[in-house]
Image (cartoon, rainbow, N blue to C red; front, side, top):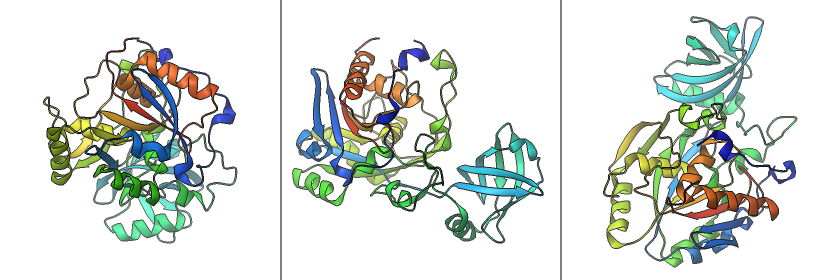
Length: 349
């Protein structure tokens, strides 16, 4: 298995720069063992069965991109993961200008600053102080929604991006990237799922900036995946285990929800409550225990997420699916169309 096995050619015109309007008007490619089928997101209730359980991620994207200054040196800070007590792991552009002990003043947020605790390469541990409310206010005042690099905004994020790049389930602040499969959901779609008898459970995974990092190793097994904070509480665990016991399917809304579920999975296919960091890295050959179907967008070439979906639905099947999506002008990446994958791990490269 090589990283190049997960490459494909994507015309730039297929990279979505804005979501479908309304959101549930996006297309949906269904991938089963017996082939591919073109649908729309609004068909999702009919594609699921009464008694199935849809598991969604309630993380909320924060305005995590900040601009700072240490003396005459300017830096760009991308908050990555909260460590508690005002400490944040961050990616820093122009980080070589910083050293432990330096104080970085945040531009556009009067009185907000961060002390550099440690730095390694382009990452730093920053201390914003214990006043979380003050930091949240500073982020709202001076922070930018951290759109992925393939969504081009010459003048920075637009006003509508603050709404578009947030899911209907967003409750728990802490992500620096959206769980994009859930960007398709609307009140209309949720009502239709409820009417169909599809149940719903909620987990949390705060998506980190590392989700945009490419796999640079020729052998993907040598790649080091980033840690992200996740939680699956007792109520969600009970709902998942009850669904499994009753013969229903567990459907993950996005790779983030899948990673939480598989982190918490037992060998029996049930899950236990979980709270902490996960660095679960899913490659072909991974044994899935908790998830039967996956709703997900189309992912970047050579990315860990393309490797994950290839592990879930089979490498040959996903190659065919992506070729079909390109040939039929599906829209790709965060603001793009979706796919519904049914698990089939037996498909070898």
